[in-house]
Image (cartoon, rainbow, N blue to C red; front, side, top):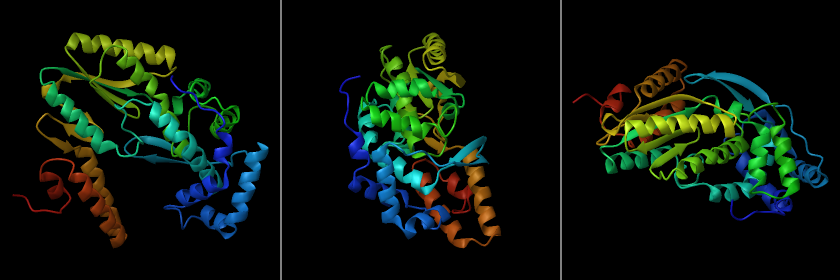
Amino acid sequence: MGQKFRNLYQQIYSWDNLLIAYAEARRGKTYSSSYLRFKEYHLANLRHLQLRLIEGAWTPDEQLQFDIIDPKKRTIACQSFRDRVLHHALIQVVGPILDAAMMPQVFACRVGLGTHRCVTRMQQLMRQNPDAWVLHVDFSKFFPSIPQDLLLTHLGKKLTCRRTLLLIEQVLSVQTAGVPIGALTSQTFANYWGSRLDRFIANKGIGCFVRYMDDAAVIVNSKAQGLQLKDEICAFVTSEMNQRIGKWSLGPVERGITFCGFRIRRKYKLIKRQSMIRQRRKLKVLLEHEDYEGWRHSQIAWMGHLRHGDGQNGLVHLGLASPC
C-alpha cells in the first residue's frame, strides 16, 4: 500500500480548514433552509463544530432521504449543512491522500479527469487495439452494497490515524449498510474502494482498461480471454469485496461499446439516445413551467456536453440546429 499517513485529525478540525470547508459547502446551497440557518451565526456554528471534533463528541444529524428515477430508481441522501461542512473538511485532508493511491485508469471524481476524459481514453485504447475484444462489467447496486467493515479496513491500510478512522466510522453510521448516495464522502470512499478491482486487473498483466466508479471496461486479446477474465472478476468481487457484478458485456472492438453515456466506436462517439430523450423531456417540462432561465442554463450545459461527441444529430434532436 506504500506510504501510510497518521496525525491527520488536527488538520481536519483546524480553523483554516473549516473556513475553506464552509466556503465549499455553501456552493449551490445559498437558498437552502439548512444553509440559511447555519449562515446566520456561521462563525459560532463553525466554532461549535470545531469544539465537538476536538472533544470527539461529533455525531451526524439525521439525513433526509428521497427517491429519484434517472433512469432507474435510486435513494438519495441529503445531509444537514453542518454535516456537509464536516464532510468537506474531512475530504480536504484525506481526499488527496486517497487520490494519489489510485491508478491512472480511474477517472471518476478526480480533478482534471471525469466522464469526457474517460470516454476519450476508451476510444484511444480501441483505436490502438482494433482487432481486440472489450469486456464491460458493472457492479450491482454499488453504493448500497459496499460493506462498511471491509471499507474501513481498506482505508486503515492507508490512513493510520486512529481518530480520523473513528470519525469516518461516525460518518458512515448514518445508515446500517453501504454508503449514502449523494454524500461527498461516499464518492471519495467508494472510488477508493473500487481500486481493489483495479489492482486485481493490473496484477493480471492487463494495462488497457478504464474505470469510472462502478463501471470498468477492459481490452482483451480474444473472446476466450474475455470470458475467463469475466469469471475471475466476478469471483474476486464476490469473495474479496462482498459484492457482485450485475450487468456485463463482451464484444469485438469493431462493434464498439456503450460506456459513460456515450456510444463509442473507433471512428466516432455519440451521446446515448436515452440521454437525449431524457434531456428533451426535461427541456419540455422547463418550458411548460415557463422557467426560461433554467431552460437556457440547461441548454448551455448540454451544448458543452454535445461538443465531446460527434455528429449533428444531437443538436437537431434538441431543436438547436436544422437537419442538413
